[in-house]
Length: 431
Image (tube, rainbow, N blue to C red; front, side, top):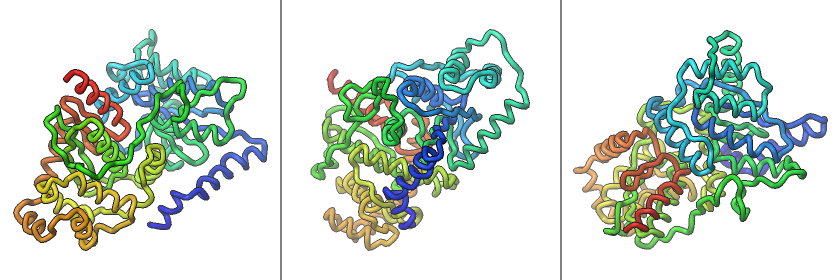
């Protein structure tokens, strides 16, 4: 496992992929292309194709568009909740980048017509964008019936997505790496620049955070150094920031570090509500998804300036050891500090938390008494509060982590920390 993680982190892997997919093709006079997997019923695909229509004008690269029906079977944990969330989240993206907003998902009749219409058009981003606009805007005056060629086309593309090692729509494949959704266009554009695909005839259309005048995105949140003083400070100034986390989720780690920074900068109480990992709740996660999450978290960590150098899987005994003593740390006013230390053990220090002695060392470093913690956990079953936290998460209409709530507002994913920050700033300005 450690060798595999080192390989995923290594520059050698990146160089090998670049040589295979870019350098060799150029040597033999072949073009490198980016494969774009879109689902006409996916709100995030709609947002992505609008953004790509802007970006594509400035790069010398072919975009191969492949329409699929949706995520591979078994990937979406709670399809109904996911669909509800997807439209709301897509509209956050639309608001940020001034894209077309959406109100409701298109009907099956309209989707079928959109799929059929795509078959008659030249495969390019401009045409794909128009199909999405007409489908989500219900602008078709005539409708088509489902046809076998269209079904076969989507099945082939769905199988291609799986064989290439991915699982979700709104995805881009370039030189062996995947980029999912508008939130990852920053990394995608960095790859385009790295491989010298910029069209010198056009103005630079860049997402990089060092650009003063970003056309696509404003500056990304950059996690500041987290002060370890008063991490659990309570305040009476407004609503608390509540974070739902799983120790096994690298996105939870990234989101938690950013949440700590937010709480400190805006003088907001931070409440931690750990939940069980999906795998410990009987949910199977495809290996392709697990691999992508880790690779994506590594590059996001670099962008945010957060340490993420390893992963010692806490699944099973590691989770139990950490969670069973969490309540005691919480009663001592050190819930945030304790969880941060455990996250760093997993993702930075390479410490195996399935060994109880390592949790004991964390306790000692935080000046917590392990003997008292043992006595406390005998009377306070950690599984009960974990279930309560999961129920609270479900009541927010979310199924997984990380999630963050502030007052009446709640968001899923570390990518939405800026949205939480916006609500905190608004509250502070009005109080």
